[in-house]
Structures are given as structure tokens and as C-alpha cells.
Image (cartoon, rainbow, N blue to C red; front, top):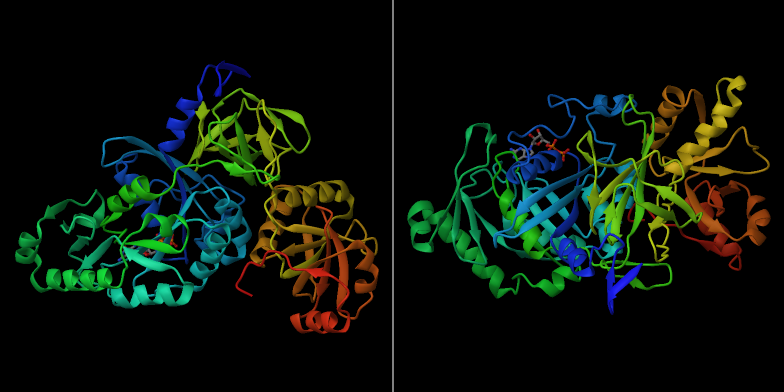
Length: 547
Ligand code: GDP
């Protein structure tokens, strides 16, 4: 490390803190949280379309009828039409003030069974877009994911989607957000025309009418016109007047945008869109670049914030294997927290102190991989050949740092795994170890059960399907799973482990990270035990749901 100007860090390649700071400031890293079917894939395509990276919607996700994916082990993903794998999209966007921004959009799994994966992705974003179906309002998966964002204090922008279809009243949806999740909605736009008759939006910051025009199939960016209130009244009549009236009601109620409460996680700006018709999508991009926070550094295990201008650091938030049959490798996705990264840099892996060579760094655009040459705070690097990296691991350069581990979720489903073919004992062990390292399932062991029959623990049963599928198709060690009758897990201290393990309908096992978990058949058993033995400390783990 060299310091040419006192107090200003200069990287060995001559990159100054100012340059890193400027790159960090132009970046926005976010994820969309929603219930399946709210329109996340459609919105993602529309966002990229607007940013003009692709010219025609439909080139990113591998859903039925769209361009197919290269993923083979995720055939089940195709069959179910759900998105299990996670991708990181990066695209440039010119802000309304003309500045060139860079958007990083991290995809999250859509199914509740993969909420632990989603949680890991959400540790890597600076902002979340909560996407709501106008007809359905807040749905269970949205609520769960909202809790995760709240837990992490991530600012949330709310998007009410599918306004082109009949749905609920806009004011009623605002009430629901306030009442059910305690976030104060502060609409930035307000719909002109009821749900199902989407004429455009009132831009509450300028008072202008943004009128939308339908295009065939919504395949190109929808043209929009900006009309003054007088012209808006001529153009949209009673619908405009109603929008103005309702906006005034909101204003009287103090529901105007306020940066402090948004960034503090107590209020949420709201936009109305039709992702399918590409209405309101560019307003979302504008709001992201204008209002969402840029990368601001990361707090390490000692509670110190490492600023974005500090030497390079990143943490792994996702490890994924078998994405492509041509490359049977693992990709570790790392979010850059500070400094600059050049492909080929030799980093240090904080967990082992060993060097990590990054010759295979990639950026992953949809299912396509391209070589990545440099990255800045907020960016996601895909590191291939990353056998040593686990979710939560820190990588750094020059000045050591250790970021806190990503907490594991409290599992709610348990099953004993046994190899179907006893001669493949080695593959079995290796495969189980790999699934554990990637965080596909948690792996628990005990002397009593032995090494040949570890217990797999999951937040949702579909994680078991993924584990089985991968063990057979990719790791050449098919397994059978025998469900165990436990529903709750608590961390227990080693000195109490024997005692707890002797209770009826309970068992104690050790997770691969060394934490001892006490499993109970039901919540009532657990509560009964706690009542009878108040001195035994049982600690809650991060819950996936709102229990
Ligand atoms: P995801 O499961 O959240 O990724 O949802 P998709 O993007 O796959 O959308 C689910 C369905 O809703 C698809 O049939 C979309 O065409 C449709 N859809 C998405 N956005 C809109 C919208 O704004 N308006 C209408 N009418 N349909 C939409």
C-alpha cells in the first residue's frame, strides 16, 4: 500500500480514493422482493429494457416460453416454472441529471422454501424494491421478505404493479401497507385511472401528468408525455381530478416523501406500474438513482465501518454449483464492499489467511457469463473455481478485515440422509460436505447416528429435493431421505446437550459450523421443556417466518 497524499489511500495500481468514491456513488445495488406471480421477472426485463441493454423484453430469464437456461441440474426449476438460482444483473443507466449510473440488480429465489438463500442475497443489497400485485396487496412471501429487510434496516421502495388490470383501490392499498407492516407509504406517483384503466400517473413531486401510451404487446419502451395540470384535466377529465384530490388527501396526511424516514426504514416511497406494458418502469429507475442509497461501506465483526474508499474487501453471499454442464464448477458470488478489484488480483481469504487468485472472475448476466475485468463497491463478482469459499466469507486486499458471518436460519424440516449405494461412501461424504458448504441444506451430526447417516436440516422441504437431485445427478451419490418428526430447533450449550438429548421427543446434534442444535418435535414440547427447566439456556436462531 502506498500513500502519495497524506490521508488519501492510493491503491498499488494508482487508483485514488476519490476515484473509488466516485464509482461507489454512481452505483445502486438492489433486489426485488415479491410473492410469486407479482411480476418480478417481467419487471426485471422491463428495467433492463428501459436501460436499453437489451432491445427486446424476454432475454434474461429462462421461464417457459422465454429463452431457455443452460442450467441442467435445475431441470426441476424449469418444470416448476420457479426461479431457484440467483443471478446478478448489471446495467448502465443515465440518470435524469445526465450522470451515468450503474445498476446492480440481484435476483432472489421466488419460493418461500428458499428464504435462506434470499436472506443471503439481501445481505448484499443497499435497497429493496417491494413489488405488490395491485389486486392482491401484501401476500405471505412479501411479508416474510419484508421482515428480512426490516431486520437488516434496508430502505424499501414499494411498487404497485399490474395497475392495467382490475385491482384494489390505491388508498386502500396504502392503508394496508401502513397497518400490516408499519411502513408509512409516501407515494411519489399516484395513478390516474382506477386499476384496470391505467392512463398514467400524477408525478407528486412536479404536479405533472405523465400520460402513458400503449404499444403493441408492450415490447418496446412505452412512450410517455408530460402534461401540465391544465392539459391533464383536458386529457383525462375526472380521472385526473380524482388523482389530484387523492394526492391532496395524502399531502394533508403528511404522506409526502421524506429522505430521512425512507433511509431510516420507517417510510416507503410508492410508485404505480404496469411492468407488462412497460408503464412507470423508467420512473422506478429514476427513483433508484435519485433516492436509493449508494454503497456506504460495511461494518466488520468489531463493529467498525470500512468505508468504500478503503482497500478492497468483499464478502461471499452465495455459492452455487452446477449452473452449466460445460463448467462443473462452483461460483462464489461476492459483493464488493470497498476498494477496487481488477481481475487477476490476489486477495486474502480471511477465514484461512490463504491467498485467493482471481483469474477466473466473471460477471454473470442472466445465465450468460462474461469475464469481468474490474469491479467497484456495490458490484457483484462471480468467482469460479472457488472451492474454498463459503457464504459469509470475507476477501480482502492489503488491510485485513473480517465481516460478520451471515446467520443461518432456524431449520424447520429434518431428514436422515443415507447413501443408496454403500460402495459410494466417499462420494456420499464429499457430496454432503459440499451441500453443507454451499448452504443448500444444513448438515447435523451426532455420534449416535454416525457419519453414514447425517441429518439434513432445511427451512423448506424443497431444499431436500434440490439436495437429493444434486447428490444423484451431479455428485454421483444418490441418497434416500427419511423424514424425522422434529419441527423446531434451538441452539444449546455443550454442557446442557446431554441432558436435553435425553428428553422424550428431543435430540441434540452438532451442525457443521460447530453449533449444537436441540431439536424438538413440536413448539409445545419445547415450551414445556423450558417451563420445567428454566435454567437450561436455549437460544433462538434466525426465524424464516414471522413466528
Ligand atoms: P414473477 O413470478 O413475480 O416473476 O412474475 P412474472 O413476471 O412471471 O409474472 C407473472 C404473470 O403476471 C405473467 O403472466 C406476467 O405476464 C403477468 N404480469 C406481470 N406484470 C404484469 C402487469 O403489469 N400487468 C399484467 N396485466 N400482467 C402482468
